[in-house]
Image 1 (cartoon, rainbow, N blue to C red):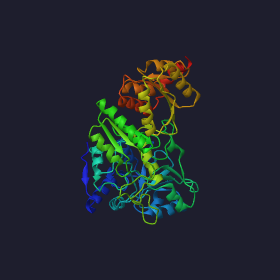
Image 2: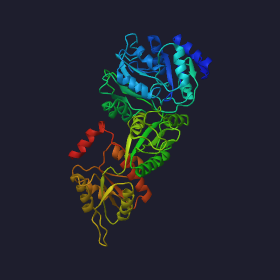
Image 3: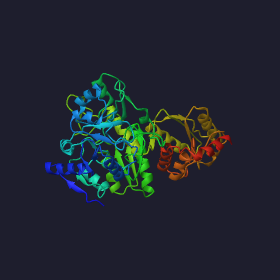
Image 4: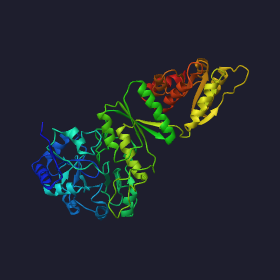
Length: 500
């Protein structure tokens, strides 16, 4: 165990931290994005120490921090005009540029790549610390690999005390999410490898050229052992708290109802649940860590729409550049950056809540008619399009007729899903299952509602109007609709069902 020093941002302590770097040690430092874990970028041994302290895979490249723009040539073999333009516009600030590396820079620092990711952080104390160190300072986020990034020195202490030599205890980070990483190895075709507070629109305004996103940002991180990530976060699990995380996406009203239904279900199951209603970049990682400290089992997050309100004291980019956060709304590209962190934290566990042009057919006999009518109103409120197939008359209604009618709507594609109601839910569900390709499950408990979609991929459900209360039925339907199908070993069984 190392005795980890807690240092201030006073000059004497910054020089003490710099001496630690010169002697091959590790010192965490504040930036405007997240806290970094500092090491001598030109020392292979120091890089290995940083990887070891974090538990970070050695092929995940480290970002190199410099104190002055002119120092970029000390780590990059070539510095195109485009890089200097961007440095003038955004440095010091949350933009990292990927360039060909100088041969003196060890591959231990660059994750085995022939490129270097370099930036100049927006922190007066950290710029002094780097300058006093007399070298470029590599700085991955100062946390255990895979955990939420640290935005306060206390987060660093919780993760790395006893593993590093010192922590420079500055103010909480102003930005809250990591820097934008821009690949400039082809200066005429810049590509964002990791989204952040510096948006493609802002970069394009400076370079007068189109800026694209790396296609990898739209897929789950690769688990291919031969895949070499160009930037942090492209390959390995990132930003995850100890608790399970679920992201709810869709119309805000639908998201609210879906989260409420899930909260009730988790609470009934005895699980400690935390909720985040539209996170902001500055607070997101801190909220995840707070829930971990409270022992939450699951965290439910409402995904923001682009244009949602942002916190008033949000991080501002340097003067002369378009503000990414204007204190009123969240720029759509910053929204994308935040969603990137949310999805990684959740392991891509997403619930699509309501609407989404989905049509649901409903049918009932006289025993399920009243419940069906209640469900129609509930589902319309959630944004679903409804096809009402059940008709109430004084005469007896034959449930096989309406079960079959609803099933045929689903199989023919006239509806995406079906719901049928009778007195017990049994008869009308049996009738639906007579239609080939229909998987109609009777819902009685929340667990059955979840498994019906998750494992059995039920495209219809049946409910008992004399068995369930209206609120119970609504809750079961919400769980069924909001549960994602779990593809894998159950697909084979579902295919067998479809052939019966």
